[in-house]
Length: 268
Image 1 (cartoon, rainbow, N blue to C red):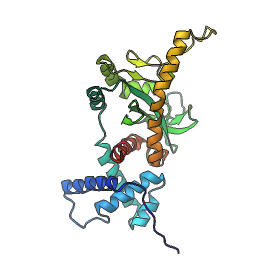
Image 2 (cartoon, rainbow, N blue to C red):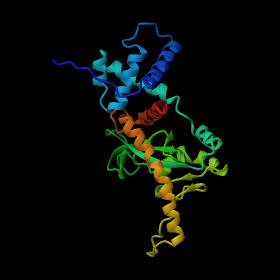
Image 3 (tube, rainbow, N blue to C red):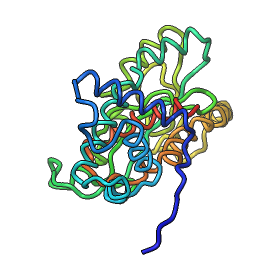
Image 4 (tube, rainbow, N blue to C red):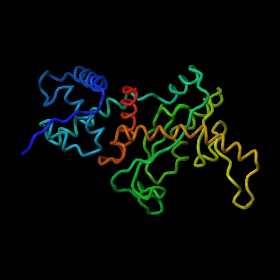
């Protein structure tokens, strides 16, 4: 057996931020001092290891000297505390208007997960994404013009189209924001989303001729501005690698994404 020392590549203020949340939660529910296997700081380290390493819960639990069942309980506790602090979409859009932001960017991402039970009306796997050709959950996000992630939605099964998920979780608030002067830029997957959601023009399927010059110019400008927003999902997935593949219940993907957003804001 060979032992070694590892370093958690997370800024200490982020660890302390999560540890304070955990300590406040323990006081709120009346947890007796010293009654748990890990203190708030060590629990925060274990949870952040999971978020950063995209691995199973077993390894950080074993290294912390607790059982795997306790590790899962500590992990879900921290996820719930963080997700509860995730910003609401209406508040995000209001802050953007107050700060004079010209637009926001709407996009979706598929977060890979293990296969689970559930079928659609036509008998296909509910969580299987034909677009990605693997099992996944669909999460929508709002990004600032510079690509900083601002908001993430709850999860829907991977078989659900981006536009449908946006209609459930994002579009009602975005319509109000557009009416107040804050438009939204999106890709072709959101064509037909409604007034205030700007998408590229696409050629008519029955007309083989190319788009008019004005429409092509509009598409180039829109894509050039919107391209910066593409980095928002990549930033969350690369910094918090637990979002690259979720091995716990896919119904928790939305909470995990929200928790990652809160940690990302603390990092920033």
